[in-house]
Length: 101
Image (cartoon, rainbow, N blue to C red; front, top):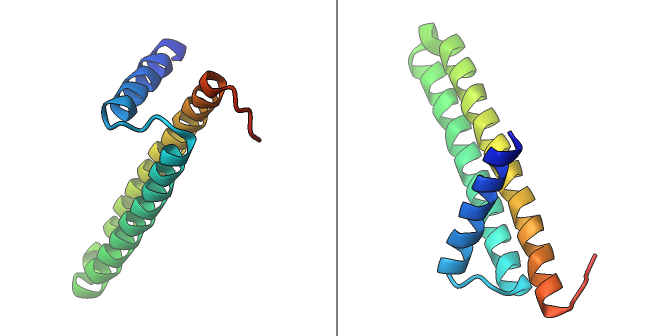
């Protein structure tokens, strides 16, 4: 598991570097964007579930379960991305000599 997480972090870090996100301020902007994206997708999933339940009452249970699984997946991936972002921020601050809490 630790090796998989390390590979995931390295890929995340390289993707940020390729996108020229190399300051704590740029990383803060990226973090705000992923928070907004999570919110948009969560609202989309919830609305889709409600519409499905209203239009196809027989599928309301399935829509609820499917929607809950999608939301769970979104939140888990969001939390992992935030953890990677915190680690990358610590690296950036260490490289620039700035330690912020």
